[in-house]
Length: 71
Image (cartoon, rainbow, N blue to C red; front, top):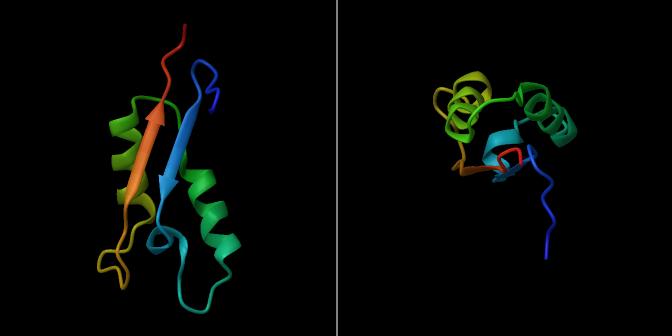
């Protein structure tokens, strides 16, 4: 069981979103963390995809954002 505190966000993603050839995966994960912002989950998905997803990715990308509403 996972206790997700109010107003928190959980982001699930596949490696295609954060991995780039010739780059450490930590760099891609940091890029994702820096891109996360507040707002509705669907808006965050759109922001992440337009900000860091490549125009023609070489790997599949799956992204799921879950945001718990404030109490």
